Image (tube, rainbow, N blue to C red):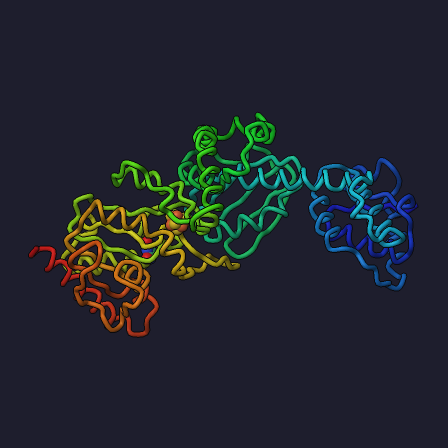
Length: 469
Ligand code: URA
Ligand code: SF4
């Protein structure tokens, strides 16, 4: 009899490979997942001896279906102590005389495998939805800490999702099994901890509520499932119970819209415009926009802001990383450049209306951060109903397009910012429309000072025109 203490998928895999090479049948092996438990049975060294004997056996090529390995990876996170035993039994059967075993879904082992995988998947989904960070500020750093109690050992499965979602924050998720830290570079794992180590306080509540709303997929909601999937202990710690009600009430409408869109016309923000339009009702409605796929990955809709009677409207491209998290336009590095340029042109941010051609952040996730990606013409056009509606209500004296995306969307696709910037043209929305460089072009350019000067000149011209009309 061989016995092993195995705690991760990687360990199980190398163990199983050796066992298969040595042709050890499943009834000759015991897998356990904790050394404490192991001492109850027999002495540890028996396993180690078996192991060293096994690894001397020359490797043989075994063909294992990828579908099995994917399921096995998920199932290795299940809390059932028999999981590694089940996996090895299946592996043995697949590689000895049942290569098509995975197709026999009525087989007890295969059925159990699928059930366990489903439970792990559901639990991973729950962790993505229910983890809620609290902000901890110390003199040295800003930390975001969450406590969560998953049903299964899903921390390592789910952590990469959080590192993609919050790459630019230092965060920690504590669970009773183990904890994970992200330092904006690397995920590190450590021992589990109790609820008491997670801080309380509500600074991040708003951010979290919007985040939760944005990942809620109406087509998947079944009220009974929701209640089953949300054990009472989650409800106790979650203020988002309040928005779950709203989301549920709204779900049938959103599903109907999804179906209508699939059957008929191209998706666009048009389907989400409210019947009675004010800046306030537009802003509310835009929160639920699913007019294109950009809503799926971004945190929230970033709507325009500024006075409803602004004489000048400035339209940028799309929110950036910081705007996406804050829910406000031009609050990141490009926003600083713009604020300064406005001041130099004799204006203040509070007197203009600032918005974007596209209201959701488009990005490419990388190890370190979310890299800005230019929206496509299709996405610009899907989103145009929002900026159209904003302009229709504000009726500015002067409209300034910052960069090519806004200029192509509002003036026309043939417009060249390099050649035609600073010239007033007439657009559908405003008699006096002009395009100029985008503030982030100044951040990227080698000739940033000359571009900055042109941006300021163009803003001065906009102000002059607004003052005189
Ligand atoms: N760039 C934009 O175009 N808009 C923003 O809101 C921020 C950066
Ligand atoms: Fe809607 Fe615009 Fe966001 Fe696309 S980018 S989902 S159209 S708000």
